[in-house]
Length: 287
Image (cartoon, rainbow, N blue to C red; front, side):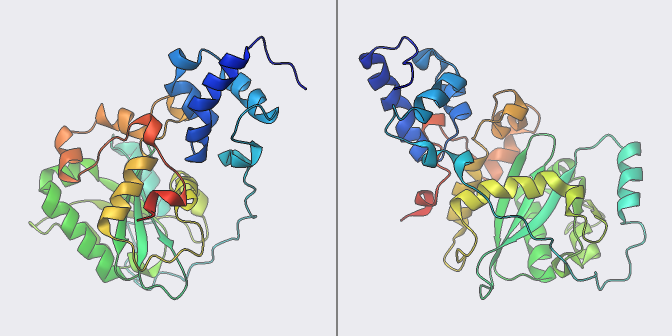
């Protein structure tokens, strides 16, 4: 048996009671160690050795990073049918960003079963690693512009423009109505839309990468037909309450709450989940 790292049986039992239930919720050892430092009093690497040695109820297979992912297929998207892309290209994005001190939001869609009409639209704040998730009834440009209108109604013209000044997305046909996305329901302009180069999803890589967390709760092949707005809000809140090494042990909500107005969170009903309750498994949506 591997060395027990000078821990008594009582220590092992106590540590197991803290980490195993959290691992079963899809939490990483980093998230657990960071949020239970005083109670555990051991490092992430020591926790990992205990799990690897079979000392915990949760095993190696239960760790989120232990799941092997299939090699990602290159997503070939149809060319944008709207010819009025002048001023909205990726080169225009780089120029605009270099001249304006504004946050970048990356936008994409996540699909469920092929036969589903519903999809999820995500808006990812690159500065905070915070991703908002919304349900679309259909994978169409009308549903996207309707969502923008709905968000602007909830936030108001000034707050929407402040939080979403620049949006970078791909060339999917659901994003073809540039005027509809950019034009405010109150008159004037509410945001600036730019597009990645064709087949260059890496140009909005943070958004794409964060979809991995969505897939831990809604695996590929999951039907979105019964998802409600309450469900997508729940997924949003749990994912954004998950601490990240890239944020120096803070969650996206923690970093965003220090920068964005409080009314942004209250109007969208965004709420930080207690660290011990964060659940990144399909069980989160089991009714």
